Image (cartoon, rainbow, N blue to C red; front, side, top):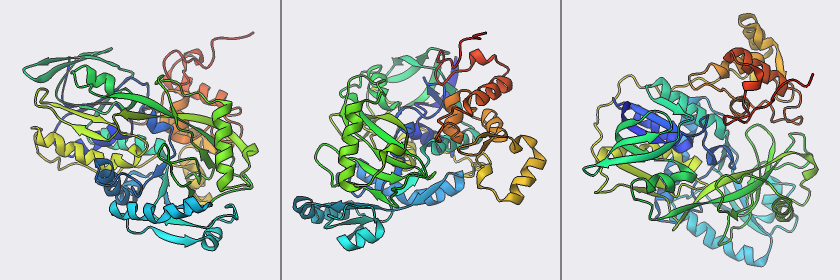
Amino acid sequence: MIKTDVLVIGAGAVGCAIARELTKYRIQVLVVDKNEDIGGLASKSNSAIIHTGYDASPGTLESQLVVAANPMYEKLTRDLDVPFAKVGAILPAFTDEQFEMLPSLKEKAFKNRVYDVEYLTGEQLLVLEPNLSPDVKAGLYIPRESIIDPFLLVAAYAENAHANGASFLLGTKVTGMITEQNRIKTVQTTGEEIQPSFVVNAAGLFNDEIAAMVGKNDYYVNPRKGQFYILDKNTDCKVNTIVLPIPTKLTKGKLMCPTIHGNMLVGPTAEELSDKEDASTDTAGLLSVEEDVRRLIPNVNLRDTITQYAGLRPNRNPEGLQVDTYDDVKNYVNLSGVRSTGLTASAALGKYVAQTLIGIGMPVEFNPHFSTIRKGIERFHELSREEQDKLIKKNPLYGKVICRCETITEGEIVDAIHRPIPARSMDAIKRRLRPGTGRCQGGFCGPRILEILARELALNTVDINKNQPGSFMITGKTR
């Protein structure tokens, strides 16, 4: 039996941000997740954009949180050592119908208190983005739309939370809850039972299934799949900003934008599904991405694709981001409807949920030892030659390049394996350091990373997983 003051269910961006915020108080915080690593599902397969909230539904909790969160990221990413860049976004109009929508889109932004949205003429947009279709009539410019590394943001939240006292129980699925006297007394898992004083449900796609354990599933969550292309850094057609289509009632549409690491991201689709684990790509979806994005950027070169992927966004029915408490389950906070803006909102949601817990009785005693600072893994390729030489003298493993595409060294990989929240699988290493994300997609570095993981974890190579237990990279010798 494990006892804790607050149990957070879900180790995605939102769950880890909540855990970090809660360590500002003198309480025990435990995060549990059924996956083998932090990052959840939606948090590791999205557009990697920090939104301003210009297009949220005015007056909603989502609007409030996203608009509040955006200005937090400059300091937050500096404190947590996470790559972040304000690149801005544009919404170009190519038809008369789209042109006529621009005033209402700007008015919506103003209702959301995003006041720095500006009109640009077609000529001004083409100066900003020379690869736009020359048919562009005019558009809107949103200067504070930004890009980030979502994998590193989640890792930074988690590592900073851990350094401030939070515990993480990964590879552990919540299977049930026992309530007594209108409170959750015991949370049952595939591991040990947990006795929490308070429970926060931040389980994303599986949020409704956790809510059902306490009879609060008056909604359901269905996955909305988005398929993407990732283009090589050396593609001959690039954009400088996030290029967004004029949205429709169904979707924000398919975009093209730079990533924080220099690739181009193209997509996504918006496909309603029932299977919460269907992250497959298909020809029809990818062709629809190509067709729609060519209307924005006619010369986009999808032959430079190095991979495609699909992300699943938790779509609440009925819609709307909700943070709920209940009179008949007094120690339970339920988060639902955290969709595509969840990555952005996480910074504000941590504070909002902490305040909600205080409102239902969580003790308020500040932790005087809380530190906002987290130092990430030394990024060898970003160092000067002098700094690289100094690091290699200190640790010769930094002189061994394992991933040639991204210039990732053995020293960095070993560091990731032995971090406070350790990377123990191939995908966990990939999310923290990016080996396998270049043109060769792991063809060169994959076998070497497999050997390093086995060596550092004192395991046989046949026991190393791609991600979840049983997803073995190799099954034995061929000769």
